[in-house]
Length: 60
Image (cartoon, rainbow, N blue to C red; front, side):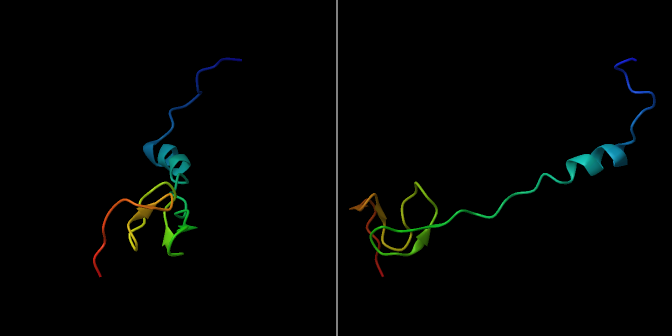
């Protein structure tokens, strides 16, 4: 038995295998200060806080 493939794989066959690498859904968590949905380990866009401290001042 040899390691080399018997025949050449076409570009279409090769790319069909790679077609299943998709992005997953974004993980959202509740902000500990205002309760809005936000991405984890980032400043909240609604209130401008991170880890219960105000980092960015947000004007309404």
